[in-house]
Length: 576
Image (cartoon, rainbow, N blue to C red; front, top):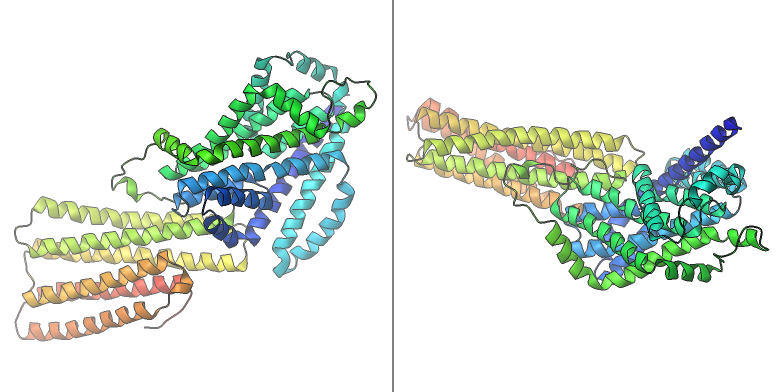
């Protein structure tokens, strides 16, 4: 008998694993098929609180994962694509959209669907070996695994005969069903279980088995469902821990939304649950052995799903009108930090680890690369400031050393950023990706390599300026004027690079970048010729001329790297 329970326990957890794997596979495939579209939908359909809420409902119902929607939303807030108010409305909608999962589980647990999944497996395996239909095959596989898990779960629940298990019945009966403390205990159990397994769907499935078997009274089962709503907010808060202030605020707003709902439900718990039972047609007072008990018990799964839906819809209808007040509250609780420059050197968009969806991860990595460009442009600005210091004979030595040290530090930062972004992209590339996304990752790898080379060039410029400063030699007035012009041309190229990197690829071409690069090349060639002539005419010595041409040549190299970055971003190849 003990061996039978061990087998049944393995079947229970195995079927839960199938259910979770199926839902994740289905969700990932849907997000893969509609990755960019989901981004555009979240950005374009959140013009007001109602459309934002409806967008959250639609996206979550489509991908079957409120976690995926919430993580995307938190990421977009961090990236500045959504305001905090927009994010709050989307998260409210995600809580409604996720209730569809409970209805799917309740339907799957009410009748045996396993016989229907085998044709789906056949269709999925055929599609997976078709390169163009591979993602659709993944989606069908996910659906089939999900329903296979549900069917196995249902049969395991029947075989376990939990309604006749004296130990289990005695455990649940030890709690007073009319006690408020009992409700709180089961609410906490539901929250802890969901935090542990990181899947409210799995805990919902367990709750439905316990309730439909007669082992767990409906009120305790609903308390577990309430706990799931709190436990599921942990994921978004974990993701936001190392993200920006706005992302942490969005995640906290998610937790506040669910906590507020649980508080008011606890106040009207009995009347509300009884109302949901009446809505479904379930008699909570019917005892085992009564006529029609089996038919009545079959409705328990739908009671749980109906409660979950009613709870989230009513909670949203209450709070959607108070989004500005919620925004003010979370801003007071999570105050923004004044980041100094040292803190600003960290990764902003991918520091929280791999996102749930590779397509979204690629997008966040691109945002990080844009920030990489901004930092290298800032480093170049320091080089120009260093040049100004070398022109001034009254420059404080400590100020010069301090600025040079900052530039040196930024060179190390550029090396670290390249490695961290590359490692992140390597993790993403291990996932099952579309050919288009693989191409984007290759382009991004090239981008970060060339951007890091820009950092190297900036440091080479700084080292040459430091050598000039230490030597005590000065450039002629004409040399300084020409060098300033070259530095300005390079700055123009960096500014254009920033525009291209931060914008949409289809809005740009290579023309402006090539124009600036050709001007840089022409200026370099002219200045090199003039330098040789000036040395021959003894206008300045060879050492000054060498430092001068080193700076001019390094600016031209930096311009080449900029062209390569823009090429990689636009997906073009140009020979200059």
